[in-house]
Image 1 (cartoon, rainbow, N blue to C red):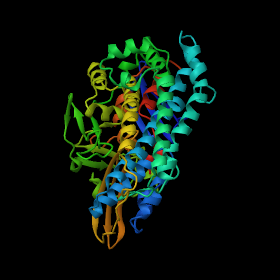
Image 2 (image 1 turned 90 degrees about the vertical axis):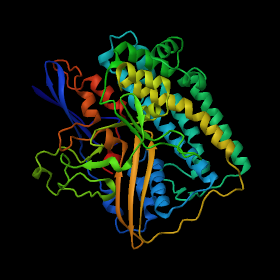
Image 3 (image 1 turned 60 degrees about the vertical axis):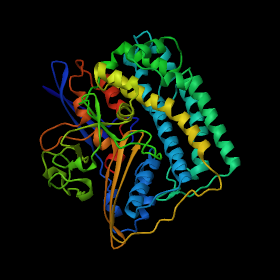
Image 4 (image 1 turned 30 degrees about the vertical axis):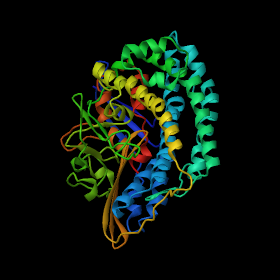
Length: 482
């Protein structure tokens, strides 16, 4: 048995280290470490509750709107506040814009450049993929980055700026739009649809969203020359539909508020079926984190007490806690959302080979294809002149929970207010779920499970297959350690 340590990873937000135990050319065990502590939860204690709206977006520059949305939802729940329809629609548009931009930034800037590595130079597809997706120099960036800039004008109109907007409030949004601005927003969405249908999918969004089986996906990819079709062909050539399986247990907090509940439903997916989500079944274990020992606690009662001397806890290897649902490790992300939403392609990919690199990336792109038309519909429903925000009154003593979905997966904020000040604030981020260390029972987190069994060649120091699996979960370590 030998140990291979990979890290820090490039093209990742924050510090990530992966230690692999290798025997007979295969990974036998993995430990995933978030190696930087930040401490936003403790920084919030004692402050005015509305300070959370200013501080938590600074946790991350990629998903700052998701952090804002979770904080606003927790504050609204604490006060029992209901936002007007315009506020709900505007929050959905703001949040969805960030999530879709995140999906494609992950695809073009973080994930695809790994296929341009020199280690694949002998593959028949390599030259074209390297020209298109090589990090920093690939031709795809010249198409994606201007399209991204134009799409983010949605946030300029509705949220003033991105990242770190203050527009999302417990009662809705601060920025009402005029009929003229509504027309301009429609043009922004139309231009982004043009980019997606010309460059990414090379097909109508609705046509890709209607794919329902691995065979249909493969046939679709063979018939097109868009960027996603290139990925699907490469992934199938490398067998990535069979690589990166974790425990096939998925969790989503539900996304995008609607009159009858979230558009993408909350729940847990296991054994091929969707189950209702019970937030009371969530606990965080610290047995392998560089945090003071204690029993696994629900986030509402949780604490974050960093060790002054991490070496004093030999079993620990990460600043990340280990969240568990009903005692089990779960995977979260776009694949979880699409499974719980009943998307046939996601269900058939998981049924065939479990959660995989291919399934995770395709689920993100299915979400792009399905949600841009929904953004067009939300915009049509906005009624200029009607209220966008309800007034929030600070409670003296209250609890509030904000459960939302960042692009990477389930994000929860648990808030306690006492005597008008924040008395407790705990955050469980998507990467906390996916990149968690072992718990007290020795149960590994989702990525640690997904890495077991991967091949490692003799003398290989940075196996590309490990990179593909890690990046398919889209790590964001700064969110993990807050």
